[in-house]
Length: 142
Image 1 (spheres, rainbow, N blue to C red):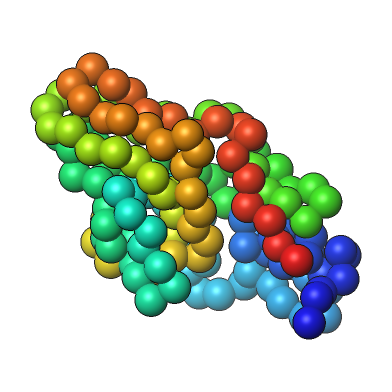
Image 2 (cartoon, rainbow, N blue to C red; image 1 turned 45 degrees about the vertical axis):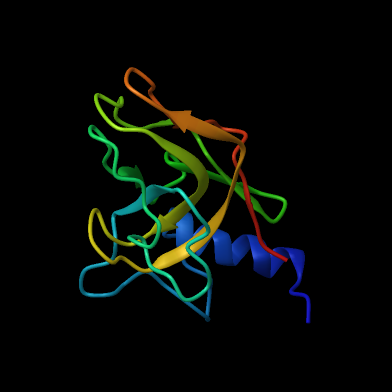
């Protein structure tokens, strides 16, 4: 069953901007997340996966923290995008093909995936390559 456009935007603003939805949801937990963590994957982590499922492991890689604010994410028309390019560490050793990305709750380990999607075109990683997701990377809610 589809959700209204207004609720989709409210939901995305709650998750990505920590903006309360009046009379329904707020961000007033004892220690709400200040950042969301973007990870890169060599395969689809799937609905049952976590942030470490198929996560790349090239030398120089680490998840990137993005502020859970309107300064970190733009929410508009049932869609969310990063405000700035998300640039990962440069590869100094190893190879990988990045096919998916995810937004989750942890800076390392088996964090909870909130959203994931494909990287198109995929990114071929080798020494000297610095992968990034651009501001045209989007997550949609419907």
